[in-house]
Image (cartoon, rainbow, N blue to C red; front, side, top):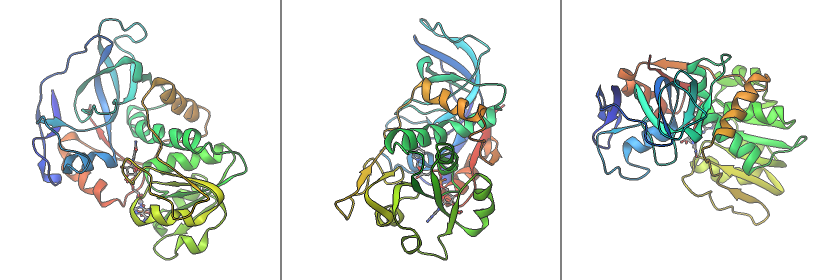
Length: 307
Ligand SMILES: NC(=O)c1ccc[n+]([C@@H]2O[C@H](COP(=O)([O-])OP(=O)(O)OC[C@H]3O[C@@H](n4cnc5c(N)ncnc54)[C@H](OP(=O)(O)O)[C@@H]3O)[C@@H](O)[C@H]2O)c1
């Protein structure tokens, strides 16, 4: 099969496009012919070696995808050849920048006709992360106010729509060029972080969801009311330590399973969430896709159209 892979850690230029061995579905797995796979912020961190050294090269990156089941391993009774499915790879498994992947059937969900393969790939890890954070870790309630940092990104775009669907008031941060887009997906208040210090403009929040990291994450505690809670997904495996004693810092566990993918399908089917804006690439353009992802200034999701 064709795939985009790395044979050492490094900058975007270490990404190569070429032949890799076809995977085989083991017991409990399905083989999926991938139609679309998305680029996630984690991918270039893995490529650089920032989230641990890879011991076996060549290595295929990519954590989420949509495609068609082409073979079924022993013991899989609930998926069949021809099923259109999407999934997020298990923690520690990657390999979605490819024409084929073998993956545990239990963490694969059926895609509906309403979603294209490109949309399903774009929604998979971003949606799973947003649901695990907003409904899981933060347990956001109707009537609460949440600040979602980095509104124009893939995870935040889903989180904004989910928070609105749950009846919360949503404040978000983004460059001015993204404000119309964020208004269109329901944000109540949008802060241009290049012009305004969010800690001066926002106060008394019940919750924060930070998707930016660094200094933005650390300073986010300031906007919480006493008893408030903040969740972080761009600060590594641990939440930053709060500089005040009356708030809670959470690092959501983004476990993979079928029910949370089905929740994505349900939210889209019910009209609560619409798929993000997508910029399409070929697998042979992985270098360019990583350069843009790493710039951290684009809207929505970057997706490889594989076939
Ligand atoms: N399982 C997990 O833990 C998990 C899963 C998914 C993602 N993540 C992490 O979550 C983070 C977000 O990922 P993502 O794919 O949604 O988006 P992303 O690609 O990392 O971020 C892109 C967005 O960030 C915005 N941005 C950059 N700097 C900003 C700032 N200072 N303030 C506000 N917005 C800013 C940009 O908007 P502007 O152009 O308007 O600045 C852009 O739209 C990444 O670090 C990723 O690794 C973790």
